[in-house]
Image 1 (tube, helix red, strand yellow):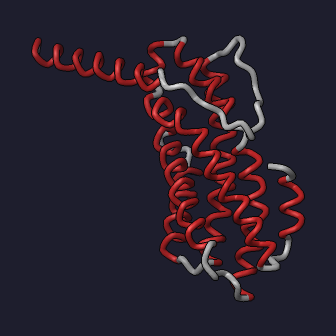
Image 2: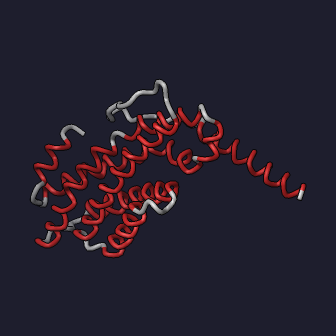
Image 3: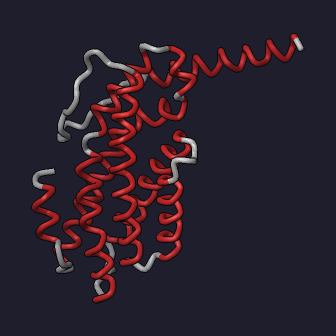
Length: 216
Protein backbone atom coordinates (compact mmCIF):
# COMPACT_ATOMS: atom_id res chain seq x y z
CA UNK A 1 0.00 0.00 0.00
CA UNK A 2 2.88 2.38 0.91
CA UNK A 3 4.72 1.48 -2.29
CA UNK A 4 1.57 2.17 -4.28
CA UNK A 5 1.16 5.59 -2.64
CA UNK A 6 4.80 6.46 -3.37
CA UNK A 7 4.32 5.38 -6.97
CA UNK A 8 1.27 7.61 -7.40
CA UNK A 9 3.14 10.53 -5.80
CA UNK A 10 6.07 10.10 -8.22
CA UNK A 11 3.67 10.05 -11.19
CA UNK A 12 1.93 13.23 -10.00
CA UNK A 13 5.24 15.03 -9.48
CA UNK A 14 6.48 13.92 -12.89
CA UNK A 15 3.25 15.05 -14.55
CA UNK A 16 3.39 18.40 -12.77
CA UNK A 17 6.92 19.18 -13.97
CA UNK A 18 6.20 17.92 -17.50
CA UNK A 19 3.18 20.20 -17.78
CA UNK A 20 5.07 23.07 -16.19
CA UNK A 21 7.80 22.65 -18.79
CA UNK A 22 5.21 22.71 -21.55
CA UNK A 23 3.75 25.92 -20.15
CA UNK A 24 7.19 27.50 -20.33
CA UNK A 25 6.82 27.52 -24.12
CA UNK A 26 5.93 31.00 -25.27
CA UNK A 27 3.05 31.52 -27.66
CA UNK A 28 4.45 33.51 -30.57
CA UNK A 29 1.65 35.15 -32.51
CA UNK A 30 2.14 35.51 -36.28
CA UNK A 31 2.52 39.20 -37.14
CA UNK A 32 -0.29 39.21 -39.68
CA UNK A 33 -2.95 37.99 -37.24
CA UNK A 34 -5.18 40.42 -35.33
CA UNK A 35 -4.32 40.88 -31.66
CA UNK A 36 -7.63 40.50 -29.87
CA UNK A 37 -8.51 40.14 -26.18
CA UNK A 38 -6.66 41.25 -23.08
CA UNK A 39 -4.54 39.68 -20.39
CA UNK A 40 -5.50 41.61 -17.29
CA UNK A 41 -7.55 40.19 -14.43
CA UNK A 42 -7.73 36.68 -15.84
CA UNK A 43 -10.13 34.19 -14.31
CA UNK A 44 -9.37 30.57 -15.21
CA UNK A 45 -12.97 29.42 -15.73
CA UNK A 46 -14.02 32.50 -17.69
CA UNK A 47 -10.87 32.43 -19.83
CA UNK A 48 -11.24 28.71 -20.53
CA UNK A 49 -14.92 29.16 -21.46
CA UNK A 50 -14.09 31.98 -23.87
CA UNK A 51 -11.31 29.98 -25.52
CA UNK A 52 -13.33 26.77 -25.86
CA UNK A 53 -16.39 28.62 -27.19
CA UNK A 54 -14.37 30.22 -29.99
CA UNK A 55 -12.32 27.09 -30.62
CA UNK A 56 -15.18 24.61 -30.95
CA UNK A 57 -17.38 26.92 -33.01
CA UNK A 58 -14.59 27.78 -35.44
CA UNK A 59 -13.31 24.19 -35.62
CA UNK A 60 -16.75 22.74 -36.33
CA UNK A 61 -17.39 25.29 -39.07
CA UNK A 62 -14.00 24.59 -40.57
CA UNK A 63 -14.53 20.82 -40.41
CA UNK A 64 -17.90 21.23 -42.16
CA UNK A 65 -16.08 23.12 -44.91
CA UNK A 66 -13.46 20.38 -45.10
CA UNK A 67 -16.17 17.71 -45.31
CA UNK A 68 -17.74 19.38 -48.37
CA UNK A 69 -14.32 19.98 -49.92
CA UNK A 70 -13.43 16.30 -49.56
CA UNK A 71 -16.68 15.47 -51.37
CA UNK A 72 -15.75 17.95 -54.09
CA UNK A 73 -12.33 16.30 -54.40
CA UNK A 74 -13.90 12.80 -54.39
CA UNK A 75 -11.91 11.89 -51.27
CA UNK A 76 -14.69 9.79 -49.80
CA UNK A 77 -12.71 8.13 -47.00
CA UNK A 78 -11.52 11.50 -45.72
CA UNK A 79 -15.07 12.89 -45.96
CA UNK A 80 -16.40 9.96 -43.90
CA UNK A 81 -13.73 10.37 -41.22
CA UNK A 82 -14.39 14.10 -41.04
CA UNK A 83 -18.13 13.56 -40.58
CA UNK A 84 -17.40 11.18 -37.68
CA UNK A 85 -15.08 13.75 -36.11
CA UNK A 86 -17.76 16.42 -36.42
CA UNK A 87 -20.30 14.24 -34.64
CA UNK A 88 -17.79 13.36 -31.93
CA UNK A 89 -16.85 16.99 -31.28
CA UNK A 90 -20.50 18.09 -31.28
CA UNK A 91 -21.43 15.50 -28.68
CA UNK A 92 -20.99 17.20 -25.30
CA UNK A 93 -21.34 13.85 -23.57
CA UNK A 94 -17.78 13.16 -24.68
CA UNK A 95 -15.02 14.55 -22.48
CA UNK A 96 -14.12 18.12 -23.39
CA UNK A 97 -10.40 17.35 -23.52
CA UNK A 98 -10.97 14.53 -26.03
CA UNK A 99 -13.26 16.74 -28.12
CA UNK A 100 -10.56 19.43 -28.12
CA UNK A 101 -7.81 17.03 -29.22
CA UNK A 102 -10.02 15.37 -31.83
CA UNK A 103 -11.00 18.71 -33.39
CA UNK A 104 -7.44 20.05 -33.32
CA UNK A 105 -6.02 16.95 -35.01
CA UNK A 106 -8.85 16.67 -37.54
CA UNK A 107 -8.57 20.28 -38.72
CA UNK A 108 -4.76 20.06 -38.90
CA UNK A 109 -4.64 16.75 -40.78
CA UNK A 110 -7.49 17.72 -43.11
CA UNK A 111 -5.83 21.04 -43.96
CA UNK A 112 -2.71 19.26 -45.16
CA UNK A 113 -4.72 16.75 -47.22
CA UNK A 114 -6.84 19.47 -48.85
CA UNK A 115 -3.82 21.65 -49.56
CA UNK A 116 -2.16 18.79 -51.44
CA UNK A 117 -5.30 17.92 -53.40
CA UNK A 118 -6.26 21.48 -54.40
CA UNK A 119 -2.87 22.16 -55.96
CA UNK A 120 -3.72 19.48 -58.51
CA UNK A 121 -6.28 19.72 -61.29
CA UNK A 122 -9.27 18.52 -59.30
CA UNK A 123 -12.83 19.52 -58.36
CA UNK A 124 -13.64 20.93 -61.79
CA UNK A 125 -16.81 18.98 -62.59
CA UNK A 126 -20.28 20.49 -62.19
CA UNK A 127 -21.01 18.14 -59.27
CA UNK A 128 -17.70 18.99 -57.61
CA UNK A 129 -18.42 22.70 -57.85
CA UNK A 130 -21.76 22.18 -56.07
CA UNK A 131 -19.94 20.55 -53.14
CA UNK A 132 -17.28 23.26 -53.29
CA UNK A 133 -19.92 25.99 -53.08
CA UNK A 134 -21.41 24.34 -49.96
CA UNK A 135 -17.99 24.54 -48.29
CA UNK A 136 -17.48 28.28 -48.73
CA UNK A 137 -19.88 29.71 -46.08
CA UNK A 138 -18.52 27.28 -43.48
CA UNK A 139 -14.94 28.11 -44.47
CA UNK A 140 -15.58 31.83 -44.02
CA UNK A 141 -17.15 31.41 -40.56
CA UNK A 142 -14.46 28.94 -39.54
CA UNK A 143 -11.60 31.20 -40.58
CA UNK A 144 -13.06 34.34 -39.02
CA UNK A 145 -13.33 32.44 -35.74
CA UNK A 146 -9.95 30.74 -36.03
CA UNK A 147 -7.95 33.98 -36.28
CA UNK A 148 -9.32 35.01 -32.86
CA UNK A 149 -7.69 32.03 -31.16
CA UNK A 150 -4.02 33.01 -30.56
CA UNK A 151 -4.64 35.82 -28.02
CA UNK A 152 -7.31 33.74 -26.27
CA UNK A 153 -4.90 30.80 -26.12
CA UNK A 154 -2.29 33.11 -24.60
CA UNK A 155 -4.80 34.37 -22.03
CA UNK A 156 -5.70 30.81 -21.06
CA UNK A 157 -2.05 29.84 -20.75
CA UNK A 158 -1.44 32.83 -18.48
CA UNK A 159 -4.46 31.87 -16.35
CA UNK A 160 -3.22 28.28 -16.06
CA UNK A 161 0.22 29.51 -14.99
CA UNK A 162 -1.38 31.33 -12.07
CA UNK A 163 -3.20 28.17 -10.91
CA UNK A 164 -0.71 25.32 -10.49
CA UNK A 165 -3.41 22.67 -9.99
CA UNK A 166 -4.88 23.66 -13.35
CA UNK A 167 -1.75 22.25 -14.98
CA UNK A 168 -2.87 18.78 -13.92
CA UNK A 169 -6.57 19.33 -14.56
CA UNK A 170 -6.10 20.85 -18.03
CA UNK A 171 -3.31 18.66 -19.35
CA UNK A 172 -4.75 18.39 -22.87
CA UNK A 173 -5.17 22.16 -23.08
CA UNK A 174 -1.59 22.69 -21.95
CA UNK A 175 -0.36 20.46 -24.76
CA UNK A 176 -2.51 22.13 -27.44
CA UNK A 177 -2.16 25.83 -26.51
CA UNK A 178 1.48 26.29 -27.67
CA UNK A 179 0.48 24.82 -31.05
CA UNK A 180 -2.40 27.24 -31.67
CA UNK A 181 -0.42 29.89 -33.64
CA UNK A 182 0.83 27.25 -36.10
CA UNK A 183 -2.68 25.73 -36.25
CA UNK A 184 -4.14 29.14 -37.13
CA UNK A 185 -1.41 29.91 -39.65
CA UNK A 186 -2.02 26.62 -41.46
CA UNK A 187 -5.80 27.04 -41.46
CA UNK A 188 -5.49 30.59 -42.78
CA UNK A 189 -3.02 29.60 -45.49
CA UNK A 190 -5.17 26.69 -46.68
CA UNK A 191 -8.29 28.85 -46.37
CA UNK A 192 -6.80 31.36 -48.80
CA UNK A 193 -5.98 28.49 -51.15
CA UNK A 194 -9.60 27.31 -50.92
CA UNK A 195 -10.83 30.81 -51.85
CA UNK A 196 -8.42 31.24 -54.74
CA UNK A 197 -9.32 27.74 -55.94
CA UNK A 198 -13.00 28.62 -55.83
CA UNK A 199 -12.40 31.73 -57.94
CA UNK A 200 -10.26 29.90 -60.51
CA UNK A 201 -12.92 27.18 -60.81
CA UNK A 202 -15.72 29.75 -61.07
CA UNK A 203 -17.49 28.29 -58.05
CA UNK A 204 -20.74 30.00 -57.08
CA UNK A 205 -20.28 32.30 -54.10
CA UNK A 206 -16.50 32.58 -54.48
CA UNK A 207 -16.42 36.38 -54.75
CA UNK A 208 -18.81 36.87 -51.84
CA UNK A 209 -16.77 34.54 -49.63
CA UNK A 210 -13.51 36.29 -50.56
CA UNK A 211 -15.02 39.71 -49.85
CA UNK A 212 -16.18 38.59 -46.39
CA UNK A 213 -12.68 37.50 -45.46
CA UNK A 214 -11.26 40.84 -46.55
CA UNK A 215 -7.51 41.17 -45.96
CA UNK A 216 -7.28 38.06 -43.81
